[in-house]
Length: 340
Ligand code: NAD
Image (cartoon, rainbow, N blue to C red):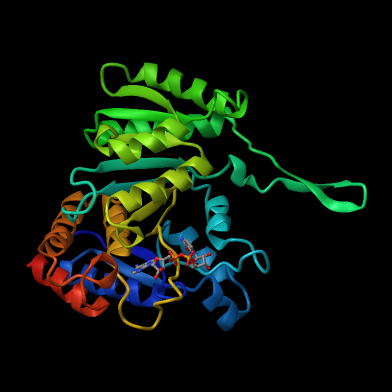
């Protein structure tokens, strides 16, 4: 029997508990060698412990170095800052890996298979912002600083090329806006070109300006393979690629650091459907597959992805967001039945 890996499980807020429990049930049925340390974060942690990111949760992730996380509610414009951003900082989770693959033909595109690698620690998300007072208006001008460092650019771009080599992908496209932001985006592009040269003969390295990339992703997404880009562009383009393959309910994301990996759905807490039993657990299930890949259980991850894809392709037992009528539990049962 293979060694069991302990994983910190953060059910999260809104639909989080329902979709993470569905995922745990599916993983148990698949015989995944995982044990769970259940911890809280987000609004549910504020309600139970008065802290959105309790020490016990951080200590658990420090120990296990692996977490599967449901979405967390972040109050808009007030209250605590995003726990997701805090976790990325705390564990230096520098690469955010968001694959978008067609699993349900008949949507807009049938052959999309793109991995977006988003720089996860700096860019415009460093939180260096201020107002400038002009005359009587204290908020007359707002400034946000974008930070790109050679070290952070190098490690995420190298991660994208290594991912391409490991998974037999042919091309890595560095996406940027260096024509306008000549310093910050220029440094990212320069670093990308230098690393691409190192991989010549193994992976094709090219680059594209972000606006042209957005247009081409909608016109000819099949052309793209791996995209690596800065934080804000990666955030936006990865939601775009989710839309190409059936929406947020189907797209997972892995946050990878040197030691720790935190795996989650790309979507949020879906407050409009929370507690109704209709949420689609696929994104968290696919995030669990990324976790299994990460710890070397690629074959099991492949078996689970195949079961999910079969259920989605049959379209008989799928959730409302992808055109069906089934609830979370019924869909999970259908995936489990295909694992056998
Ligand atoms: P959302 O992703 O929660 O919802 C957008 C739409 O997609 C809603 O109509 C929702 O019902 C639907 N949807 C999302 N996931 C679904 C699923 N699995 N199955 C079926 N339908 C699904 O985005 P939002 O409404 O902008 O955000 C709600 C909350 O989530 C906010 O507090 C936000 O800060 C938080 N959020 C958290 C994360 C995270 O923890 N990683 C990510 C994004 C948003």
